[in-house]
Length: 344
Image (tube, rainbow, N blue to C red; front, top):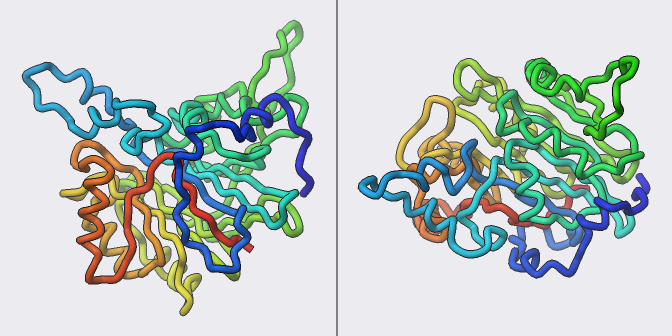
């Protein structure tokens, strides 16, 4: 896949003279022969309410103050690891210096703000994947127009059937239809919705730029299915689970078969609360059970709520001690965290 010509949006996304961008030190996970330019980058790592949480900030003076939300208000949000948007991940597959396939998982309520804070160094967006039918996954779809060329092709958006039904009601103007007589043309996102099937691989790009993802069903509260994704090739593999309260046996069986004897390099997993479980999310106890069972090379926690998690650095100190005897590396993700990988 050749790189499209740079436009107004692309020029913004590739601007290199952005000092805050270089505050993000990449975490090395990839094998030593990894192409240095392929990576995943967290655009959002918080819960559906984000952090700082408005209810925490507007509590009365006699209420217990949320130290994590208050910490998130200090300084520039672009450099504050406690400032978190809705869960979102950029996958940038770069098999050569001149080509790249860039896929974003979820465009939620904080999508636009997250892009402006993180400022990912990409030339274009190849497609979007939606995990489920909640606003923190699809609420920012109107802002897709900001990351696509005005005269470019429609952007493919892959999602489950139920998610498409909900999105169709929320954003009817994004659905294909004939323009009515006298209707004024307006600049809206130009998208092409595609429905995936669980456990069936789909792809973005072609040839060496092809990026394949497999959607895996996870229970996100007993009335909702949230899809996680497995991707990667013969080198580094990633398992992404943004929202989960329970893992069905068929899904775990698929994961174990996919991992085989070689395992998985990166696990991204939901843990809304540090000190307790939740009806619709893993708490840290369940996340720890999964991490110890799969034993990835590196685990990142997302979906973090300030309701029970301390500030970023304190939380990572706790996690380091928690998994020390297991010999496992586990830490909170943060908005802007960039992880080099070999996705070939």
